[in-house]
Length: 148
Image 1: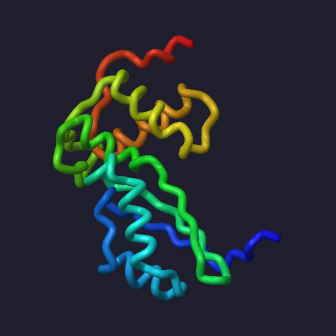
Image 2: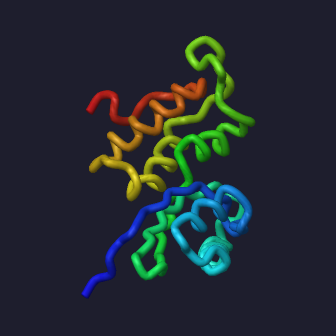
Image 3: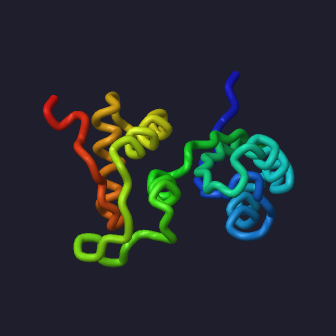
């Protein structure tokens, strides 16, 4: 018989850097999860992605056991890396802080595809380009799907 789910916890943690300090410790402690066990497992599974911000969804069961799913880094974080900027613009429509190409948008969209709620690469690219636009990052070049 399947275990009964007692709660879900969503966190954003740097890969390979989970420790029991806030926000991880209090979030897991409130549900009665073994904090150190989560930190060990998370760090072991994310050694190859050290330093990247990774969303994680932790499913907590009624017997205090847990499992977790690690998602791909947020599109905004990937856009910041690709554009080589420190952060987004405070006034994105008037002050532009960087630019990326459609090829970079395509690479980010292909990486994010499993976590996005879309079915085609074209719609995924559109979502990533929209995120870039709202951060004050311009997308240069011609959209490969513009004439499609």
